[in-house]
Image 1 (cartoon, rainbow, N blue to C red):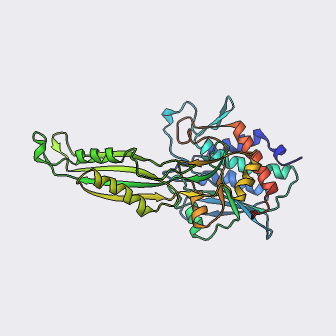
Image 2: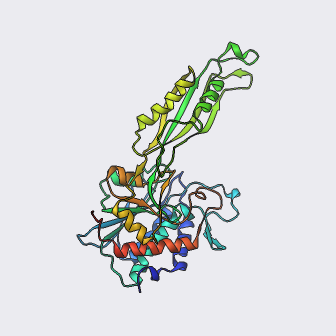
Image 3: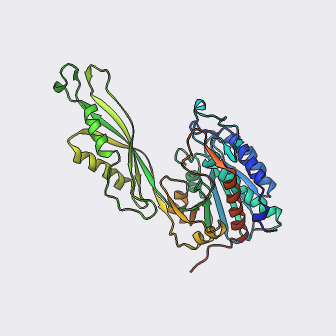
Length: 381
């Protein structure tokens, strides 16, 4: 029996459902409920298991299968999920319900389904009697949804990430992700001058200035080159708040902008594009403070590891992702060839009634089984 043929749809679905039933919402952040089922499966596979917990209640589960001196393949997946509003769901968000071939629940596609598929691939290798020729390491991490400070970024900072290649099983619709945008999140504080609401011209409205700034930035053209896989990034004016009363000219207004960036653009470069458009729109008294920055990242689509993953995934095409993943830490900081490949679609991630098709869980598990069975290191041209 080959490894892919040993994949069991019921088993991968059951594991994904078990993980969904672990409430790991972030914020507030608490991935500990997922540690027990993950450690159990890794131990069952004969892995050396370690818990890395840089902050209390924020464990990442590290598992290593194989102890040879050969190459290492890393699977990096996050176990935290975004919060839910239960009243918006037609199914229990932590129920792991299967209905009409779809597995529902928070994290079903983003990305507990991908983790389950990656682990099922290893279970299938074991059942088929196949010992992977490389070491396979699992980093099942905390804190991706709020930036990675207590997760992959902490692992990198601690010097615990070593691999010849890596796969991040985020939802990619079973395509091979090789590029992703980054994000600059900025708070803009606009200052005006208070006055009586009966004579607004006697004051200076920070709300009116903020409205002009929003018009300049939301869906703006920043002059970015079009990326072949990522297109031209955008900006979203996500929140705005200002003024103290309806009959007072607003002295202050705050807005927050999410400016997406292409690979290679730095924090300061991205910030300069934001302030440049604000300054071109008029004379404003404002400050722009960076709340967070995640760089974009990419891997050459012609890289040999991309071809190897595509073969394992039934010649899946390459794609870009408009959002960011922990792949950026592996690509940009460590130079590890990294792809994103997993079941499900980002179009339903973070939504009510999030789901992943059981057929995609199974197909992804088969691709992982083939990859584990055949990976012998990154080929060179």
